[in-house]
Image (spheres, rainbow, N blue to C red):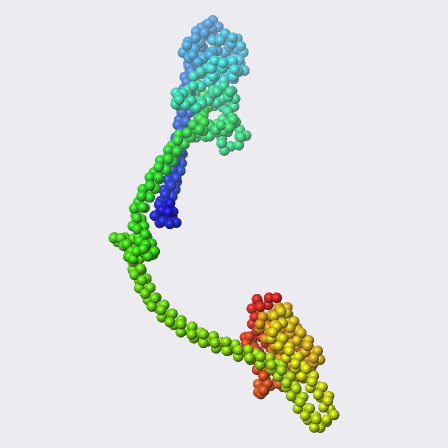
Length: 606
């Protein structure tokens, strides 16, 4: 089964492709050729039925013309026999005609007034038929029609037609009319001599000018032909018209038949408007065509199967060398063999095998080189590992240094300010003790308050180092609490604002921004003598901006400030988090500190 799986074998894929193409082409050829054969055979059958119809119409027309000519030829004989003294001779003439043409049921002669003078059937003698169709038509010229449609008139056979002709004297004047009633018992079976007697499916009809069946099966006789074309609506008028070429019609009982018609002519001067019609069921029309189509289909399928079999055998023969090469390559790949089996020849398989052998040789050479490079790489990795360990040690030392700097900044922000305030107070107490001893007690209370505040700030700094409140609440609420404490402590007027997005910022950089804001507020409290302070936190174009502004005395930002590390610490903190610090100030111009930090949208998550 693996050898037949096209996903595992190129030969199997080629075989299935050949089988599929052979099947597709065989079916397509069978359908195409079968359709052509079916159309041709159907056309031949329709043409044959049309020829049979023409032949039947010609035979019947000649038969009617011969009998009509016999009636017309009898006219001069009857002219002399119509005299009253010789009317007995009419019966002898009638007897001769009926012996010559047995189809005449009766023959009658009427005078100019339509009174039957004599007839082969004595019951007609003396009857006035001057208003009958055959008399009116026969007095004008040869006439062909149906005299009697009653069931008794066709009890012995099918009424094919009646005929009449004028009887003229020597001057050419009409002196009477001779008529004959004709029964053509052989007409319903006429197609049997034109078609295959073993298959009596073909039916013959004779229709009059109104489409009424004169000859045909008893249930349809004297009825209008009620077949309609297949593509026409059922209520299409049923008037029979000559059909050329034949067409398929649908009968009221649902049967479909092929209908062929031809005009029936009894002579150049007689036109009854009758039609001869032959019908065959659709099944018989297409029977031979279907049989030939099936034969073509099976022949095409057998040829396709033979082609597919030959293609499969040829494919296996042609791909055998390729399969052996694939097996050799697989053996080398699984280390079951050292060399490829290179087949002889100069075709694609041989060239492919030689190319594989060269690639295998090159791969083995490269494997040796890679082994050498791997050993060298391992040596270098060992050297780099020792270097990385040294750099890691230095990185740990750098982290310790950064932590020390952070602690130094925190000490500067808390204890250094408190100690400076205490130092100033002690110096003041020394001068005050020398000049005003009585005021020392009050200043000692103030010094004690400064020491207490310094202790509180140190404890607050220690708490902030242990707990990151900014991460829990966000930068906005933390700045708001710090600003409120500043306002309560200094009594300075001011305003704080923060948009919703920036207020949610709370990663490790937010704590650094808070420390920078605390340092700025402490500097404002101690040095600026400002009456109004504003703190604003906002986000613009993925940039977080912290702006602290006062209307104090300002300072020279470029002048050196020995032993003062506030601004230095703020710049270090800005560099640590990748922020931009800008200080806009000048003497008596107030101070504005702006910190800008680029922040990803995910950092603003709650």
